[in-house]
Image (cartoon, rainbow, N blue to C red; front, side, top):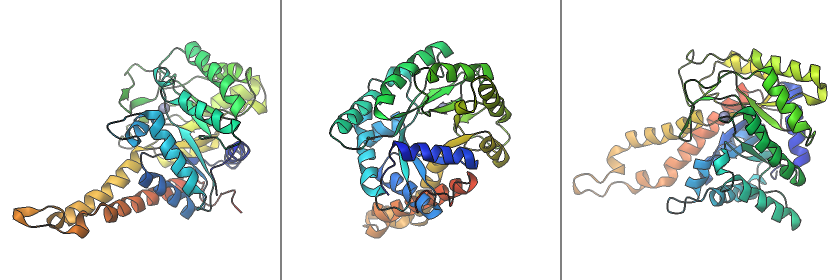
Length: 341
Ligand SMILES: [Zn+2]
């Protein structure tokens, strides 16, 4: 199926919240990793979200170009073309973008969507994240409100983050003193500010002890009950229509019971990057260790072309990542839920 339109994306998010499951939102940096996500989702009969980070987008544009908007456009266009051949729906999203990168990442992509819509074509991306979590809440929401005013005109869904996710994401480190747990007061303020602009769905990453990157289970003290408190506060103050569509960031290495508890409270999207990177690279490492003699031209020998041709080991990596996507769809309970009939 093609990439979702706005109505289908909203339906995806609402179905997930009602059905207490979440979509894997998988970071991709190349054609192969994008293909791996589509394959894993299709084999799981799960819809899902393909997302591109600032670093991933720069990488995709080539190491001598490093143009984030260009690389993201390239990946999105590839997904638009090939997604039509898979029996599931997929949404295209851009991941964490700090305020200082909006003008070189998100805004050129929004402008491209605006051009496409004016020409009667579908949006380039379905949603974009603005990460103002390092800013005071008021500043974070001032920028979010401006973005939402623009996004709503083009049926783009906004994702924001409130509270700080620990660890490292694309080279951005959260400080040790960061606010790792969001409060219901903060998320209520989010609902008030954003709903004053539009009552359309938005995505909210409210932190509950999450850490970007991977940590051994037990290291991260997640408190999913914070999400429950946030939902109860917003429903009590504004009504059920204001219930959040929540996003789980920094979930690699989380205990399954914490993930499942978060699904109960309205998490509809879970970002998975680190575990996918590992699955992909693990397969290549395995190939290289097993075929060491053929890959290298040792002692004047010519090596084995079959061993160093990138296609076989990239296919192994694609398959390994697809299998990890299937695991994510199973854990997030999105497997078997596709809207595709
Ligand atoms: Zn985050």
